[in-house]
Image (cartoon, rainbow, N blue to C red; front, side, top):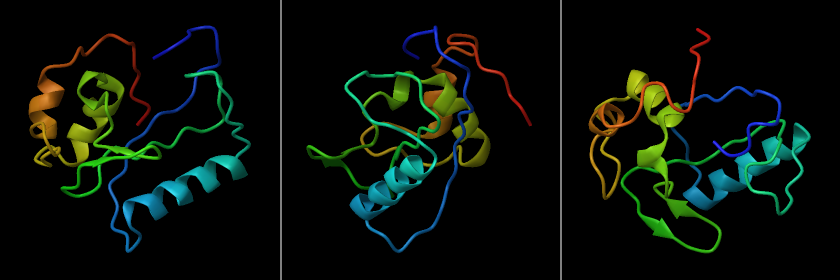
Length: 117
């Protein structure tokens, strides 16, 4: 996704239980990114050491300046949906459909992704 003239990076999907609300969780994710050397600037999809996105939070739909859930381009991203489908295929993405249904409709080859494990 985005410019191809940057180093490869690992992309992964996790499911977790938390007592934080969505905004607190987002803040925690951004602190982890900063600790790993991420510098936020105006370049979208620029080189980064770590990129942690909050894709969905339970059945919530949020549209705010700080956070949009589910992630606005989730249904287009094979590198999100294909690994997510491996861990929670039956999860219903709010306002869309199940992860399995979304994953069935994305390219398996573009953009290119390689499974590491």
